[in-house]
Image (tube, rainbow, N blue to C red):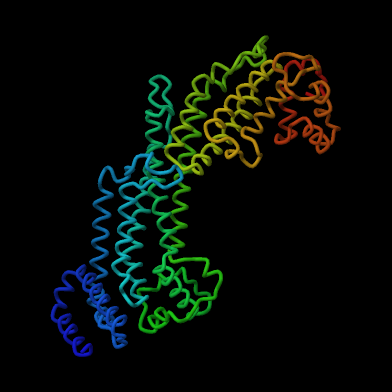
Length: 490
């Protein structure tokens, strides 16, 4: 009975062939119906005869019609979504998802749904080679289009908007939650979230059964080719595959033993590309944030009363007035970043900002002005205030860089600049156990071995500055220079 009914089905398929070719998406429905029919024959009646579905999809015109229809439908849907002004708008409120979960945008969800739906439809295809052709022709192009569109957005943004120049007269920029600067950060973060959402989906796809089988197939094929063949290069040659390739790709009985290949996956390169794009967005955000924050320190950089009588002498004084605008905006910036990005992303940006500020405070302030011990104490309080904002707002130790401390070099500059000249106890003296007059002359002495000098300084809590930087800082202490004015030292 089964062998009699199969020709009837084949006749019906042949009769409707032209309709299928003109409306390729119908082939997906027909293929699913055929697959379910044949599974019933196998599971219930133990039928092990020829497959109607295999013969149906072996028709190159039928198969091409299906693939082309899937590709056109996917690209049309993608283009319609990306053209919408709200394509990168977040779909859910922040409270719905955890901070460390990717937040889908409209275009990200569209891409993930398209790829998942296509895979669900061609999962009934018996041939692994044909599944790979679907993947290459209908799914990868959607991800490629997204990557190219985000890269285009980034390039345009870099060309026009990266400067983020702060207009002090009109105050049109800033780091406040509702400022144009914050709006630009949200725009960048929406691209980050888009790429991240698709990247996480690709990681899941990479481990799903259908794609694991595809990866095993391309590994078999690479091994059959021999030489330096790499399974990751399968897309370069899939258009030229023939019957010989199909036999290898569809031979599911052969297991792969190459450990390097087993660690990979069919979506491996896509995941890498998306990760690199994510990092590029973070680096763009970092440059913008660093530039804007340092721009707010112009007045602080020009502060010139560090060596004046009485500056910083009052132990109750908080921070320099020139920092009064920066600190609340810095706190607000950290708050905005915590809303926009996962902790790893915001921590990366804040570590980068801390490194930029550390260099700025050392090179443009501590090494550029004259200080007395009171001015050094004022500088120490300023550095501590900036460090506290970064720590308190973003989780403390997780932001520590390679040195183990935020603003490590600036902190050490402050220790030296506020060090007591001769051991006299004054409000705000450095916590160094030796006075400046006890250790600085030896450091400035050309006969002193640099390594021995650094060992001594390490015991005094100075470990990250170079010996040359330390000597320059000592020379910035006007009270020390007035007391020890030996030409050999200065």
